[in-house]
Image (tube, rainbow, N blue to C red; front, side, top):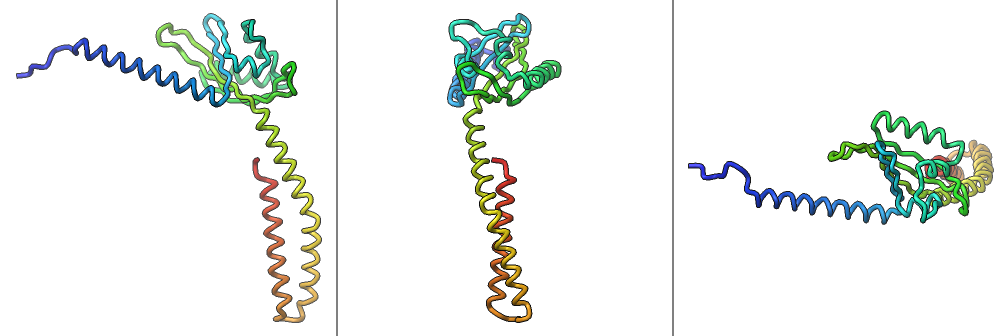
Length: 215
């Protein structure tokens, strides 16, 4: 005989709801911590009502006033003019296709050393309760990273140019010496020159790889 109840117990249902709510709060907390640690600016725009909100970090990146709610147009006005059409086209494409976007572009921010380079991501989401659509995203300040990349590129360029000329001269000199020793087979000096030439070629290959790699 089956004594199991026909319907779930109310206490069990309430317990499951509370567990889901707890896990949701935990997930939101973890997301907030991750965003703070990454120094990300966040924003969201209600595509139904047009309401637009940004966090304090995004205000800082874009140089926006802290006492006045910024508009979506205020954000767009900071984007460097020659990049603005590309950014707008990508946003329109994302909205039309209900797809994500990820793009880097420069800002002109009053009071900062410009350009300020940022990476912006965005996606469309729909709230299941209200069925309203939201355009949400993050912004990361890449200026320091790009500055470091330029310093590295300059260093590599300088080093490779400094080594290029003496290596060419050394390689030519070794070839001349090797030709002079060609009639004298078996000399230890000729074998040493060949080994030196191989090492020069390895250094040239390493320099070429260093110049071509992405820093």
